[in-house]
Figure 1 (cartoon, rainbow, N blue to C red):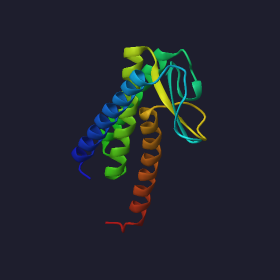
Figure 2 (spheres, one colour; figure 1 turned 90 degrees about the vertical axis):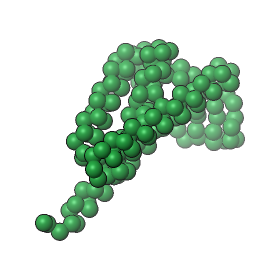
Figure 3 (cartoon, rainbow, N blue to C red; figure 1 turned 30 degrees about the horizontal axis):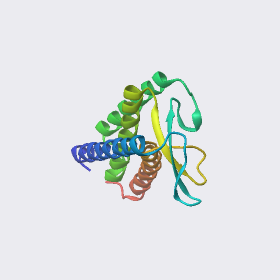
Figure 4 (cartoon, rainbow, N blue to C red; figure 1 turned 60 degrees about the vertical axis):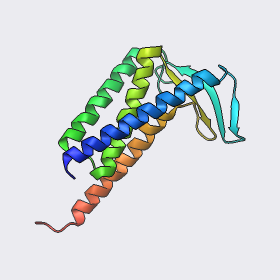
Length: 160
């Protein structure tokens, strides 16, 4: 995969994640009553507007600046991996774009609002989250799978 194609895909996916997440958070802030649970799918999906100055599961609560710095480090790491071209093909590049977009969108919240806006609750998931959080989590899983797939493919390929 040419490095340029991976970079373009990652930037497009990152931009889509930021736009979708910021739009969803804007909807949540404008439509959901703070602290009140709104049922979307009975027994499975709820919306509840919340602010989170920490990380997932409430870790590092109140350490917004530290988490903002970590977001910048994640963004830098994604750029380095993309520039090296070791991304597990186009799927890996898309996954890195999702990770970068999620990190950037939550960083926007941290800078603009002083905390991240969460509003989604799902059955069997222990805490509220947002689309950016989901993009990061899914992106990490897809990236690891893409890298492992690429490594397995390289091992099966005949030596040249």
